[in-house]
Image (cartoon, rainbow, N blue to C red; front, side, top):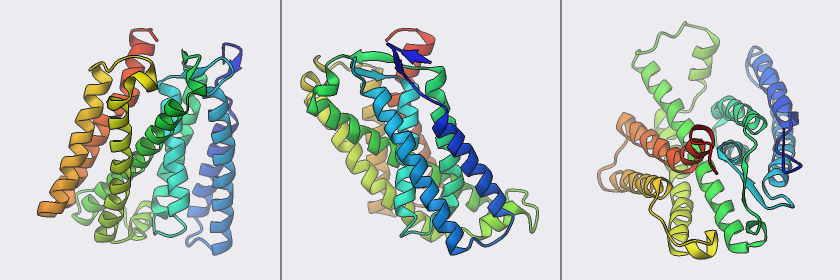
Length: 282
């Protein structure tokens, strides 16, 4: 599907993600992953990230201007989340997140083919302030997306440990859960993601508030996007403050993370979805 004569999305990244998922499913049947196979998978993920990233850049920053929509937003978020997974997986025991991160990227990479976005601004592509704000915002939401997936994985692990999930013994799911790091380690990894993600989110939110005229060419308006962005910032700030002051952890922390992330999605994706799909406006 084209917009303004520019291809909004192709099927190549989606096809590569699908191939990778099938390969991962096949490898999971063979038990432990050899180091050679792990290296091959990491190399293939990097290849797909490069293909997907180049396509996203060219379809968003076009010759006509800045083309964007909720589908492009989700695709970028998924790309950043998978990129952070790829980088951190070299140093941290987070291989359990791989399948979920790749599946999320597959689904989101398909969306721009259905929803090609709209021309937001013909001048934004040449504005370094706007481009910097956009890049930081995308990285922050992508990193917090990875944290949200990590929190969901922790929720499944916690319920399995307390036997609140019916897991067939010696099944693939049972072995997958057994291979996860201990919950304490998972929780530590989660908050490491949140600290960095929150710092970037703070830069995104407050640069948008302070430099709205420079970034977007219009004065600050407290619309739904701004309100939800501020609300998500306060939720993440409250979560990290509670962690520091009272040692918040466990299911309460997981629920807080998912609530804050849902609010963040309403700000950056939900607002565009309502405008484009429900109201059919730019």
